[in-house]
Amino acid sequence: MSAMSDYLESGIIDHFLRGQTISKPSKICLALCSGVPVDANTGANIPEIAGDHAGGAYVRKNLGSPSNTYFSIPSGTVTPTTTNVSAIEFAQATADWGYISGVAIVDATGWGKGNVLLYGALTTPRIVTNGDIFRFNAGDIDISMA
Image (cartoon, rainbow, N blue to C red):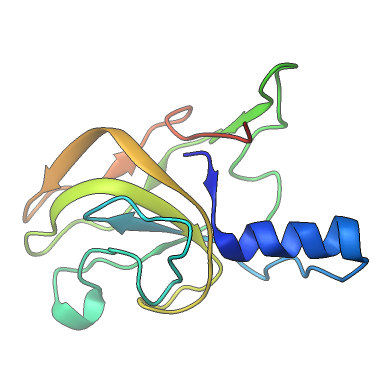
């Protein structure tokens, strides 16, 4: 995952080149998507799988306030990269969630809410069925700015 949304890109430009303030989100959440999000997506229109309002026990994984808890210090000199330092696990599916091929980091917990910050495609898409637990093992999520 290494693409920034238009929302985040605009905020960075405003902050560094126009002297505007960009607020750190109070929380970041991981959303699972049935397609790969694009730059213009928001939390309301990403191709996120059906939320808990539709059954199946899917909710965005709340990673809390941005901190050193989930992601490593960026490393590398050509393309600095951060990775998840521990496993990130979603609740067990109580219905079929379907095809998962993308992921987004958003700034709100509720399905259909907030702003997309970062997004990307899964290297290996997966179909999640009733009883499955979707998990990213430590080191599975790589975030870089190229």
